[in-house]
Amino acid sequence: MAEQQMYGVTHCEPCEECVREEWQFVADGELRWEAYDACTRYVLQACDRGRGVPPRWIRERILAREGSVHLAVGGPDGVPIALLRRVYGLSIAEVVAARGTGYRATPVEARYLKSSTP
Image (cartoon, rainbow, N blue to C red; front, side, top):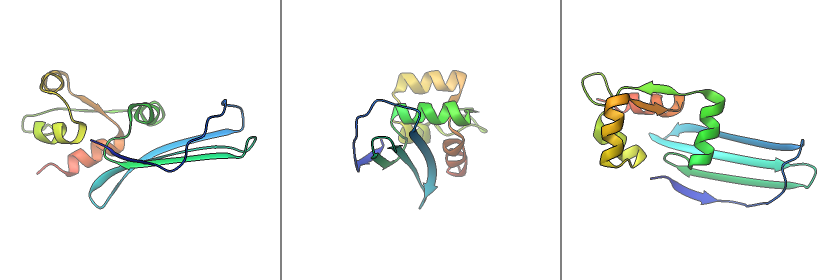
């Protein structure tokens, strides 16, 4: 599960001056993520970061911007089931579904999962 630390929270209506960025990376062998929101009109800034898979709303924006990578699950060429469960915290039912159809990962998650496979 993701470890999350919030550095600031602001609430403003989105406007044309709002800047919203989010990204993932691997540091020290761990998945990490950061999100940044700023608005020059209202002089507001918010920064959020954590370890592991980002919260759903951040991950969905990364997927929308960067696309997804379809990963096979299990078998000789797929991501190990135990690794998938550890990284994403999937239930047995979710793993069974992913075993049949594959799993949609962000490009950074796909590289991390593939590099973590023996």
